[in-house]
Image (tube, rainbow, N blue to C red; front, side, top):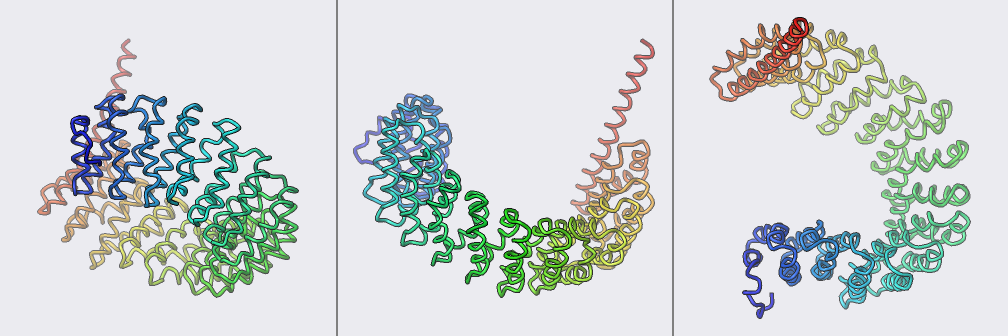
Length: 612
């Protein structure tokens, strides 16, 4: 702040000034976050005359504080200074923030200026916004010129024809700037800017800027032009695209920098949809095959992710002739990341090829990928089997599927084990009850004894989902006896898992199974020597009481079997057990009382009607 600044002129914001001078960054941050409150207290006139000028001079601070200031000024701050007609006053401090060194602060300041532009009238834009834009665009330091690129699109359609012409010239100057960072900003914002142009001006102004940037000597600039290419192509007819952009499409896809080719591969489907079917068949098929065979694994990975989307634009014969051979090569790719990307998307080809072609061409690749040494590859194939199952019988994969699942279930990485657990219900739906019981039932139970808690937790959720897939009677035979049997295990972790499994799956069962199979062993665990198990039993009893206490039979069950045990646990020696028992008892009692009161109200109403 300037030394000659008169303190008496800003007495109402003295507290804010003191806090912004503090050495504590957090205190200065808090002060910035409080400026809406201060503006409200000052009133619109004083906020404009005192607070905003003060903030305009407060740009010599930590980046964290300046970022917070840029955010606050973009959060409808005009409401505190008199409304939309005074919103232009906020452009001053934001202009200063747009020229600072830190990129995050500049980007946020530009974003806030764009938000303010939405509420400015055309006279305000032409009187205040356009001069600001010109100052930033012609600034001595590259930082201000970089920020200015984002400010052209929001106002282009709000100004007069003559000013639009100036804006097109101004943006063209940014695209030809000597500083790579400014050209990079121009490439980033060219797409949004071109969307506002008429077709005539796309051809006369937008295309020259794009071509200049697309041939830039910096790959960090060229890679950003891929998205610009898509925007421009969408605004032209297919013949115009072929005439005006074909050369640039070829250059981007065959660029000497892998980063540019990576961007082209990542956005290839969007590009294909933008240029039209004819150009896809004539030109882009060959370009896409080129990307699938690229020297860089990152490019092949990105291209593999586009396989189903791009193939939808092609005829079946073309997919078989041009795409499937590349897919076959990628399934043997040296990079595990390429194979993982392929495994994640290859199933999308099955609906396009149909049953016979899938069995002939894709089934061998599925079987090969299911045997891949990299766990993520096998996981990705399994995760997308639902798509394949709609085309061919999944039993064709079962011989390879089972070993792959077992290997993943025993993987040394717990995250891999957890991932395969999450796919088990989906597989169960597709494989059917007999196959599941014979091949995967014991595997699902073994996860309950895993050394990692997250795996045991996922395993209990898995059992709940399986119960919903196969039904309560299946769970009564296949799950409940095995889970309750673990309650007698000498290792307390197994006993704990039993309690947690009951808590999870109980709502998916019925009262008869709970009474016959579950409540007895569970009540025995209420006296377990380990306090953690006892208070988890209290939690489980709470779930049982709230789940089944909504019928007459259920309330009787809660009253006779659950409440007495919870009453006993309320006097337990462990504080946690007493707490959870008291909470469970309170909820069980409230639930029962609520149902009873509702029943009494119904009886009372019936009595009144009969006597009336």
